[in-house]
Length: 217
Image 1 (tube, rainbow, N blue to C red):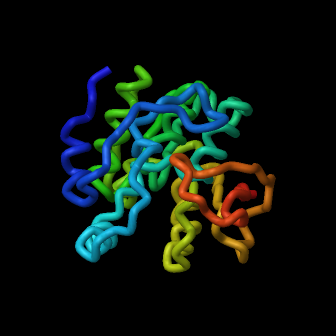
Image 2: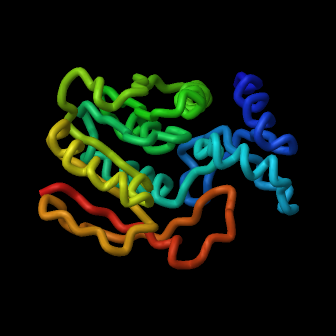
């Protein structure tokens, strides 16, 4: 188990007291991830720290509720991805991509615009002894995929246009989100709900602990 020292060093440039720890998220014992240590300080941040976080948000140090729920769903229903070429959009820590590999996907592409997130995906793939393919520019995707997975990427309304882009590049699209209450797209059906909590726990409101799944028709 190689500790991702470079990742932690980059993280500490934003959060000096932060440290990474290999761990599993509640309800997902099959996948280990390098995440922010659960004992991270909860003291108020300085204005410099807050500005640094806004400039370079380290989404990959958390296993977000929607990603956790999506990963659990894939492991419980491996037929969703088994033998298929899969893309995990906005991969973050890579938890969904890793679950897809463990569920039997033939190839899994971890796609994220943040180079540090892709570095985290590589570290987490190594931690789990699996192989991923990496893609920084979604629009550079070379050919269609069988399944596209997108967890917790619609929180910003300006991202909604991606739904049509997903449909143009994948035979099936599965979206998971805990923060959108007005999801409405003619090509998607509401499919299911699951309870999940972001890990390490951010003490989020209860409304963000229910993840909703939407599948392309």
